Amino acid sequence: MIVPKEIRTYCPRCRRHTVHKVSLYKKGKDSPFRWGVRKHEWEKKGYGGQKWPLLRRKAKTTKKAVLKLTCTECGYILHKEGIRIKKIEIAR
Image (tube, rainbow, N blue to C red):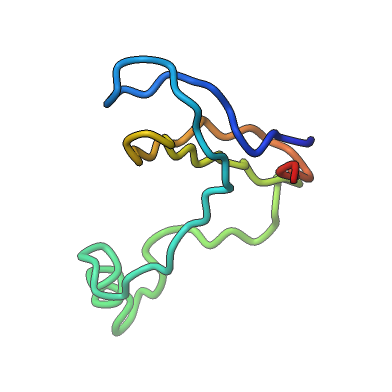
């Protein structure tokens, strides 16, 4: 799927339709100091092992691609809901 590099859509901060720059959202690196991660490491110590099921086989063939829209007037960033797609390309 080819997506245009600029989309005219609603900006909640400007409260009107403006031109937005389009890019792909990429998840950042997970922090090892978050409470859930620390608690899980603590629970894994000793006997008993893993506290939630490990995914042994992969069910999905695609990931959800999320579009990151940046307003050209105010710089507000909003994410467009992800769709399952094998390949996404931003037009140059």
